[in-house]
Image (cartoon, rainbow, N blue to C red; front, top):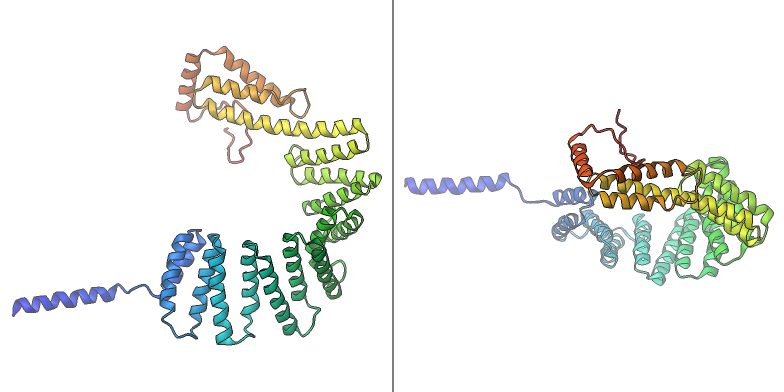
Length: 401
């Protein structure tokens, strides 16, 4: 009797323990999946969402949790680059909306636009246009008018698909439709026009319709200047495009100050030694060379190449400084010698660096390999060593006092 009582006690105890450890429920799984998703751990998130979907399928058809799980499954598949599967889950979510809430469910247009993104990623451009046509119809019916911002956005999205299809004529047509709607709604200088103007200008420039490209770049530039002022980095794409459009029309006198403004904007936004400034100087070199102004072209090319030389030499010097810590003297000297080669002929932009590199080569050449290794061991043992064998550009490096 006592044995039977003990056995029953053990059984009831195990049951109680099982009740204290409840199985994963749907919300717990979704929470775990969301946590993994936000950390970029997509495999773990997918596993949690897959388990959640198995539970959600047991719920009544009208339960909104089914929709929520399907949307998460679509998102995590897309994050993993599995766009076909993502679109399948999204289609199931859309079907749930239509069957449960009807075709006027306000979530439907947004989900359809998400599907457009997946179809574009799959390069199914015809499918994307078909879905966008449906979205356009929904937006027109919802607003009761053709002239509303959602419709303009839809035409802008269509233009991006046509651009991907290399159908520039159709892209120009729908972009102009979007711009007409936005202009009627908010006026010709409203910021909502900017991105469509940018796209339209790039198409005109790419197809060498430079007069229309000029007008469109000027339009976008005026809007940006009215928002950001004359010296903001956001002006750079429009200034660059305008200069090229003027160059393409051989309007050299008008293009020259625009190109110089491009350099000034890059220098103001970054530094005069930044590689993007070098590219801007190269564009000016091409511009002058086309006019047979060879002296001015050479001056522009030299400025750009000096920046490139400084950038390359600085990188090699930093690599040499780091290699110095490994005690490999031949490799260090070889790197400093490589760093020295771009710094010729002399230029005020990098003469200081050239002097430092030459000094390091001379100092290292005086030491025997044994002296070099001995000094390196001492340097590595001293965490407070103050020697800095090359200028550093690492923003995380702290200057020692």
